[in-house]
Length: 188
Image 1 (cartoon, rainbow, N blue to C red):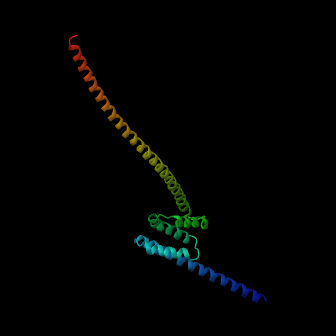
Image 2 (image 1 turned 180 degrees about the vertical axis):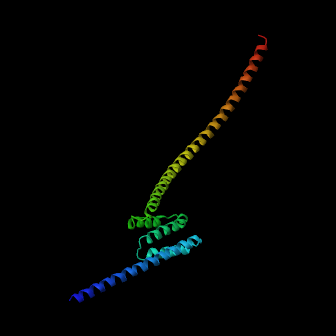
Image 3 (image 1 turned 60 degrees about the horizontal axis):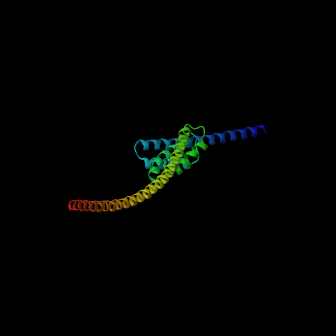
């Protein structure tokens, strides 16, 4: 009976070693892939590096490897996201990194990027709001300008009328003076 127990314990111990060996082998494979992605990045082959990093992220998690791959992939995607205008997917990946790997050395910079995205979104919304306010102010100023232009046109017309009337009154006054002089020269 003791013999069977010892054999059972030996088999269990060997099975544990086999699992541990498989885990170590898998981890070193993932580390090699991460190293390969870093080499590709250094060579400027960002598309190939992104594919390797995405593959690492899609496979079972390895702390210290998957978290770094997730962060690096997010940074690579940031360049294309600026062009397309969408960072929601990157922010989602970074939130996943922070939640899944809270003790990772990549969590603080990921948190900083998340905060940056949030402040950028707030600034974008504020700019839109200010843009609406400015467009309303511009519309009001245009309406005021149009009203003032009409008023100016009316004043110019009034000025022309007054100038003509003034000219007519001068002419009448000159005629009256001439008539008065004429009447003053006549014998009484």
